[in-house]
Image (cartoon, protein in one colour):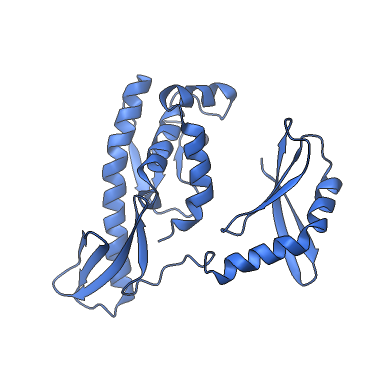
Length: 238
Ligand SMILES: [Zn+2]
């Protein structure tokens, strides 16, 4: 369970989540470009102490949040217009929309080329782009899921790629895996992490120490990949 709280600073509200650690001796606040605010505190910090700390730093937090906002980091919703940047496997491509018999989507060196009968129809561009990402996610995940299943010695699980807003992946009680198609926007290392993470749930359903040990056994740098996905995930919007 994630512990969150909200304080008010002038006209602004600051919602933060609390990360407790036994190693930590002092409190520290991190503001992410996504607008998330993390308060890292020693394990036995009370909720009142936690609030108090955020209140003391509220001016700085609000300033940071505004900086990220004006840099446009938080507005990651796509408009599907010519020249708009799309991430694919961690690399940036400019959307290039042209008129013709379509929909056809191809990847150039620096461009994501979309051919549709009516380029002014943003919906048709969007549908074409979604389908393309879906196909790519499906293809790259197939390879990754098979690889990690083999490493774990379990049968390759059945999986589906879906357009879901929150989670990167999930595993049902019957070992059916679901993946978010937007994971195709992430660098391969993060896509592989999500695949390995869900495949490990075939063996262990929870996030117990046994689970993380199993994941590390097939992906020694999984912690770093997890952290990178957590930091960059907000950019993967379609
Ligand atoms: Zn999990």
